Image (cartoon, rainbow, N blue to C red; front, top):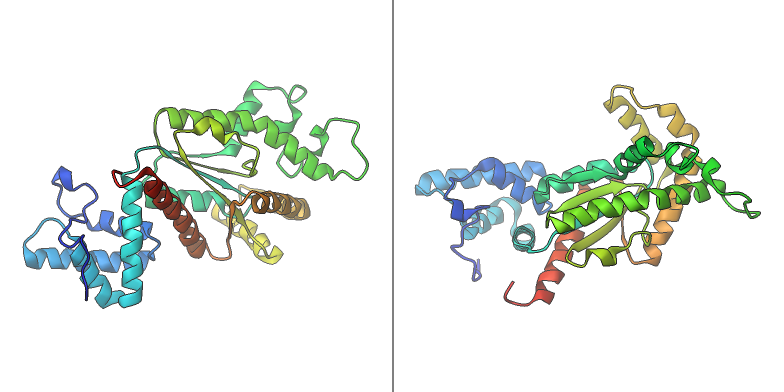
Length: 310
């Protein structure tokens, strides 16, 4: 098997720290490349055994290349090594990485955001619903009605008179998007100022409605999550209601599923028009892998544009 110029280089997350090999951190690193948790832990355990036999404290890239070739096969091993090198660029990125994850209610945005944060080592994660909740505390319903309703149930916030043929659900939703936008931009601007990676998810992240020019120092990756099949979308709500101990009103979501899916159609259309990647969440592991690919690709393009000195 051929070897590249990285042969002998250490794999450790922070080689300069002198810390010994960590099976857990290595597994997390491998999962960050899109490898399944099961395969990641198997590889990490095999690497630990190689260290014990060799009497070393740190793993080298050629160790991983050898073992992954044996366990995964040539094609998957080569893909893993390529994705790992792209992931290392994320860790050395000199400007803040901002990931925006939009999508209607119940498509799995928060799950995807948390998975990406864990795998990419990003500690700041927020929801646009948190922004809306804070705004509710500061602005009374008669002053800013748009933030005092659910995204799919704020038709009353639409200014009157309403032109004939206007979809009040979508018009009310866009009123809420505009109201929450200022809080979202403030959060992102703070992360950029502090040069911190940040993931924000929420229904209010409609492509084209945030002023990304204010974040010139950041690398911004925008994604939209959808669930194409209505039945699968219903199942997402059922699982969420069970998982949270019944604290969410399942029936309320199902009663408004038509409105929720019209909002999804709107967000998806805006994403397609603006070239924003749409991640179809039929399977969360596949959705996470797709999202990771988009992030890693964006970092690779950014690194190439920065030049060989990066």
